[in-house]
Amino acid sequence: MVKRIIFYGFLLVGAFSLFPPSVLPQPKPKPKIVVFYDDKGQIARQEADTNEDGKVDIWTYYEDGQVTRQEEDRDFDGKPEVWFYFLAGKLDKQAIDSNKDGEPDVWYFFDTAGQVARIWKDTDFNKKVDLWAYYEIGKPVRSEQDLNGDGKPDRFVYFKEGKIDRSEEALKRDGRISLWSYYNAEGELVREEEDTKGIGRPTVISYYEREKLVRKEEDTKGVGRIDVWSYYDQEGNLIKKDADRDGDGKPEVWATYEHGELVKQEEDPGKTGKPTVAYFFSQGKLIRKEEDSKGWGRPEVIEYYEADQIVKREEFASREGRLASVTSYKGGKTEKREVSTKGDGRLDLTELYENGQLAKSLADTNGDGKPDVWIYYKDSEKVVQEEDLDFDGLVDVRYRFEGGRLAAKEVLREQ
Image (cartoon, rainbow, N blue to C red; front, side, top):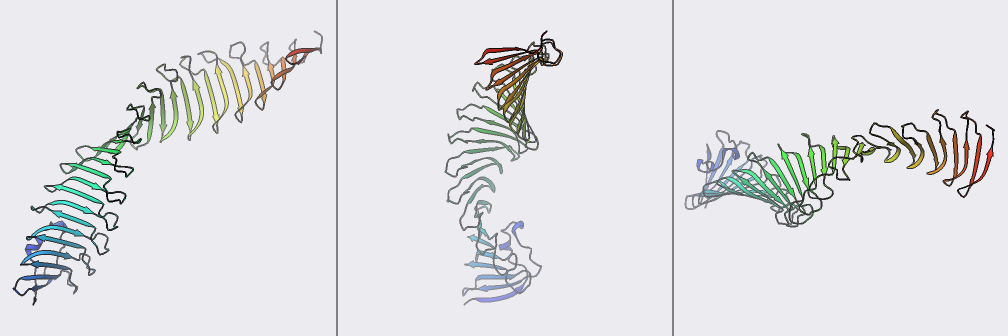
């Protein structure tokens, strides 16, 4: 027969002294306590109403006079959310119901010194443990986490002096580690290595400062050689990217970014050791291309683009910037071409195109700024040529062609 004694006062000090203050309730000075005894006169159970609402919120169970289990209702809803289990009077395990569904989802296991040895967690509340943490002398040394619910850990975290030191993760959840992360003494992420190609070794290495990405190196071909280098600002925006296309370990492509968007890309296709081609972008679209293949230090060709289509091309005859030709495009097809036939920068020949085919040309042979030779084409073949021999703006001679040969000559005005 169990005997019951009711009294007011503190709970047994022996039970509470085993728990850290941070996890203990704060009982009122005089909680109502009911103690039950077994036939041997030993305490069997103890019930306490710590907030004096008339409901029990702590249940403590004993065997042979030693505490074996304690349950606590910390939100006073009538159901326990915390369970303590004891062996030989010492705390062995603690369970917590963190989502208030009536079942524990966090378990703490303690060593003989009363320090945490393991923690198990059901982080997604599906009744399956998916996080395992291991401790030594009260400090974490390793944790494992199942991220896809198959019962097998996908992420492993290793600690040093209680702080995270490195971690490994199978990103594809196939059991093969593909991400390695490294941390400094303060526990801040400093480097990540990722196997993006499934070859068993890193192909992307990311570097961090104050846990912000500052540089990334990539082995895009998976041959064990870095061929892309990316650089980031303090906000984590990409500002520069270099690429080695031929595998010699030196970049031939240099890309510049603003606010994370590509604004300029320089290339050295001829392996001269410096950029000879530059592309300029606005809102992710190409707007201009410059080429300096002759080493002048300035472009000899400039192309302009709108809506990803070329609209104008300028070619220069000298490093001083004398124009050689200007070509205009419409719908990606040549519409007009102006040429400096003498190489002096003066555009004295104009060619007009229809549907991408040469239809008419106008030449200024005496440099007065006005055309004095007109040539007409059909299917890009010359059919008529008119000339102003005295440069008065009027046609003096007309030539007709058939099959590329002169067929007739008309003298319209005698000189």
